[in-house]
Image (cartoon, rainbow, N blue to C red):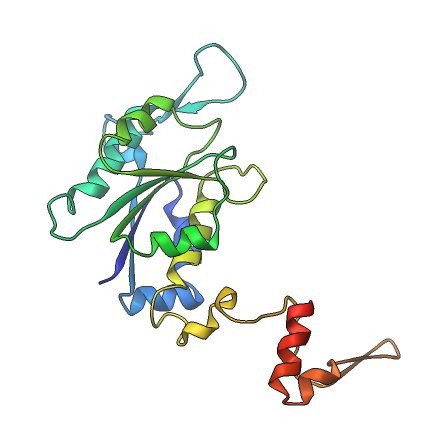
Length: 224
């Protein structure tokens, strides 16, 4: 059974460029994951072809604009609708908040057990808080921060989570041992050539890595 990732975003093209490349792109082609998009602008009334405004000034004043609640609610509702009655479906809504719990590999392992993951990508100064209160009544919600920086939108955190979850799925990396945190791995890695000459100085591969002595190599890696 594949995982369906539903991105609620104003910038599907930007997300799809990353999600169509390399290992993630291959996982999509092999149907290990499915990626779907819902644009909040599609849930704003207005003549066809007209600009659909999804933001407004914040109550109480302050800089920037805030995404209004109902286009987000309607977009998530549509994303969940096809699976609401499906037997064995397990859904979760992800909401991004710089002040929330930091996303970890443990969280990625837990998310890999869901059938549908909805990722709500905010923009500007954020999303009207009432959207979150309403969405909590539709499906379980988890709030995460991805890194300590504040981003322009939720797309970067969403892509990071999709990447982290996808690479844990059986067959995506070929071998389970390829998931770095499940094996002994150093932050420093080397490949050929054995020696690199740069500006009259030789940069060599550590001798222990050429010995074939796995116990000593593991000790070297653990010491990094």
